[in-house]
Image (cartoon, rainbow, N blue to C red; front, side, top):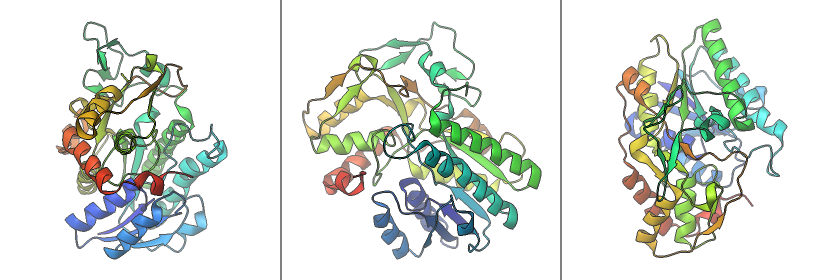
Length: 356
């Protein structure tokens, strides 16, 4: 099998490349990356040492696909993955659209031309922010908890969100460009008959993740806490009760591998993929874990709400389990321990990997 991974020097792209190199040694892996993210060169060196061929390329440029040879499958891990993208000063709204939507169009044309299958990595942030804020939750001591006495909305339960949950705007520029990419990918699948799988991923977390708090909160919080850097609970009474689940990239890779084997299966084509309710934790609970590991550290508090923050976002994997007999294997304690060990071994990681 020949495999192309876009965004291969990012955390998810490089993690998937390394997984397939170890589990499928006969697989020929190539990748493209524009190397704009801090830390990308570090992963590029590691990938090259493992015989993974990488070339500089930007999914926004259709011409960058012209020199790529044919492959059997493409994993699209290239994106601007922040809900704050396009509304702050890091990039413009047009750049978000170019990266996340126009890039998908160029990639789909490539798949169409060579007949390759596509695994599109989408996001849990395609789900409606107002609907997420209206979930039936109660304030537990350290976390928002599911109110089992209330009538749940369509597509949500104590087990998490299913793909039936509302995707009505607003969902952020990031979420909307990924949702539009999903629709476009399905149209190409039906019109040109190449396999497409779409995985709406929750928070992916593990050692070596770089970026900012809104991209990988578990990794960022542990690294910052270990270095006793300023940390703050923002919004939701400044209590840190907001809850997310964590998915290890190896578990995502396992699912993608199964999807390769089921390329001719019928609908559905969109799946939620996350750590699930068993791997969910609030910021306050994560702080408790960090305190036990690294000692006490003061967390500041700002109750002022932010536009894109949500109180509880957990993914229900039941559909993925039913279709592929897949379950996340890595539990939350092992993921957190892996990140903490990396933080202890790489005390300057945030300096190397965070934006200037």
